[in-house]
Structure formats: C-alpha cells, structure tokens
Length: 616
Image (cartoon, rainbow, N blue to C red; front, side, top):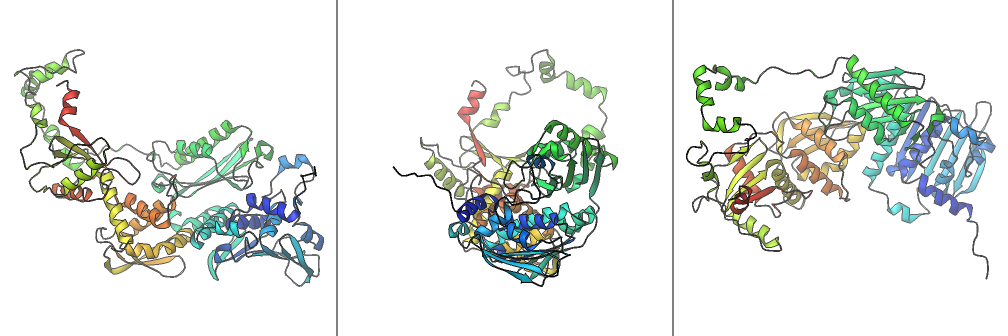
C-alpha cells in the first residue's frame, strides 16, 4: 500500500490559516492597522474600495522595512516580536504571531511599498497566491504601504459568503474605530470609495471619543482613573442618562487591545446598579493596563478573547473603579419626594382621616375579616359580607354585548382562525373596556374575558402593517414644513444609507445631505411633531443591535426593529377609543394571538376556569 500522508503545499496551508485569521475584509483591516501601529507610525491612512472586496490599503509613516524583511514578512510565522517561548508572556505589541500577512497574501493580490529612513530607495514587492510575482527598488516615502486587491479572488466560495457592501463596510468601520480609540496620539483617516469618512487629528482620549462616537457625549462622560500595583484602569464611562435600551457604544481594552468579556461587562453593569434600568446599557471606553504575564492573549485567532490569571481581582477592580468615578462626580441617583399634582388632589391625601371615618372603616366586616390572625384568605359567606356582589363580575353578558369567540378544537388551529374572524365582525362602540396597570386591557367575551397585553398586541399590529408596506402598500409620508437636520456617527451613516429605500416605504422621507448629515423631509403621520429625530435614532439603535437566534433579511430585521421600537410602551394610559381601535386592529391581523417573537398577545379566561379557581 502506498503512503497516504503528505505535506500540504505552502499556498494551501496559508489559505487554511487565512480561514481563521481573514474571515472578512474587516479582519484584514484590523491586522494591517495593528501592524502600522507596531511600526511606531504617527500617521495611518486606510483606503477602502467596494467594501474591501476590491481594495484595502493601509499607508503609514512608521519605521519601514529592509528589502529582506519586506520579502520575509509574508512567510508563515515570520515575526520580529518573538525570539523564544518566554517572549509570548511579555507581549505588548498588537501583532506577534506572523500569520496576518501570510494569510492575506494567500487570498488576495498584494502590493507592498516600504522604506526605512536610512535607505535611499525603498522596496516594491508584488505577491499573488502566496508567490512573489515581482520585486524591485522603488522611490517611496519612509514607512510602509500595503495594498490588498481582489480579496478571495482564488477562493470564490469564501467570497460568496460575504455580506452586502453596507454590512461589510460597517464591520470595517467597527475595526477602524477600535484601533483609533486605542491610540489617540496617532492620526488616523478612513477613505471609503473616494470619500473621506474619518479625519482624526492627534489628541486626548476624550477628544477621540467625541470624534468617533458623537459630540452629544462631550458633557455626558465621566473620567475613570485608578492606579494600583497590580493594574491601572483609565478611560471614560457615560453618565446614567446616556444608557440605552439596546447595547450601545461599549469598548473594553486590555493593554490597548480590544477584547470581548461578558465577565467584565457584568462588573461594569453592577457598578451602575440602581442607577439605570436593568434592561439598559451604559456607554464605556475603558482601558486596563497590567503585566502581560498576567494575561494570555493567544487563545483565539482574532485575539479578541483573552484569559486573565486572576479574573476575580480584575472584576473587583473594574467594578470599584467605575463606582468611584460615578460617586466622585456626584451623579448617583437621589430619591424624588415630590408628589404628582393629580395625586395631591385625591381625597385620601387632601382630606383628613377623621375619627368618624376611622370608626366606620374598622367596623366593617371586611376589615374585621382581614384583620383576624391567619385569616387573610377567608371571606365571610352569606349576606353579611360586603363582597356579596363580587360574582356578578363574572356573569355572562347579555347577547349582542360580547365578542363571539368559538371554542378551541383539539388541534387549536381552527380556533385561532375562527376567533379572529368572529372578533372582526363585532362592534365595540357600546362595550366598556378596562385598562389595568396601564399595561393590560380587559375585554369581555361570551364565556369569560380576554386579558390583552397592549404592547405585545400593538407590536403584532405594527409588524403586519410594516410587512404590508414593504410588499406594495407603502405608509403615507407626512411632509415636514421645515425639514430637520440629523447628524449621525460614521457607523450609523453607513447603516442609514443602506436603509433609505425601505424606510421610504415605511413613511420616512430622508435624504443624504453630505458627510454624516441627513435631512428628514417627512415621517409617518403617527409620529408626534418634534419627536422625529429621537424616533429615527432609536430605530437605528434597535436595528444595529438586533439579536435573534434566526438569521433574518435586512428588511425583516428593519420591520421587526420598527415594530418593537414603535409599539405602545408599558405604563401608557389609553382612552376607550384607543383601546377599542387596538383590539379591532389586532383581530384583523392574520396571526393575532402571538407576537413576532412567539409570545402571546392575549390570554383568554373562561367562566369554567374561573370557577375552578374558586372551587365553584
């Protein structure tokens, strides 16, 4: 039998390695930017074309390389950072394993121009499919310029897995922002398809945060600065009012390397405990500096997941540092003792509780029953009880006054269809609906009542309305007399540009006004005047951080995000007319009984079930 094990050719081995290191254009952007930082550059320029598929070019004014180094840097595991195994535990540079350039050269056509300050001429190298096609001297400035063209040209299957240009551009911007935040003392620029998206002058960390995340944070972030023998923590966290309902701008760095850590994120969230709602997320840009020997950064190809020698110490330090910063700037919450003006007019508050009223209250049988020890569950039977008419609430209403809902068949499918059909034919003009806790609506039914969750019901109504709009029944646009200007971050600019066509179908007339500006020319009629900017900003935030176990199309994500964001919030009081309109709209839906995430919109309570609850 012949031998069957063989060594892979270098180009195939490099392509396999590239599968881990270069997953998408943004992966190459990250590696090239980090190499430029390691070269001690003070100016780094990123140029992208066709979302990185056609061109990714990084130019820096760093140390540059010799002819030999320029050739060797594309070999697998060729690095200047490691000479022995112990160096792995003293890593302070961004790149160190020597995989990035070899992987890039395996899946793209690469051109390198580099020159050191002491050399009169530079070096030009052209590589394709891991093979050097051309090498010659060239006149070039000090530093390095690497251009990678036609990403995955030789792996078409990988190229087919890339997302739309807008999505890939967003990932590139994300990686650019992470590196730019880490090094505010370096000039960065990003040019996309010939248009400069970022021009970041050297400055302080706070200036860089405002440049990248938006000027609205200028007065809304608090400095964190704690120095210990074990580690240093510095950066900025947002004041409680910057917290958002979806995970917003949160950046955590260890030794200037961006990381993801659910464990440390939990520490930060705990520091905000009782300052923000439990379902909100604060802004933070935090840096942890500690001995590299206490950290293992070599546990994941992207180096975004790391291991600490003692996670509990790091957790405690992070939580304490953020708490101290928030307390130092006196932004902890205070109790509000001012009473609502409407409550002050209530008899229970405005009128004294006289001795006559006390006697009348304590002499009632209801008071006496519930004041007996261990008798809170007992209600006196017979005519003596003050609750003798309580059963009348559950008696069936007269014919013509209720929804006519059919009983469920064993499969349950016909019941839902017939319930919706019957509800559509009913008129609620003479029905009195009840709202409970400004969250639920009680609606009478033929054999009991329905308990409807108003937010869930409205979400279902909006979802079907928006889905119909994108299928050819657009929502009418109400034009604004005076258009509003909307300034966004570069990330959100890319995202909104991608959604403009679909948003027009949903009633939003928005035009790009150059750079990161947009003009809001019109909105759906149901948006309150003056609230247009807030609605769009919240929608973008909802869309950006949309999460689901199922992959949805761009349009599906948009209408689900809109339905969730625009639905009636808990705690909103509804008039009789609004409740009736909501119920009619709900039972006109094709699937009225569940939300878009599968939760129920209403629960039916039938008379026989209620009887069993009371042993009747």
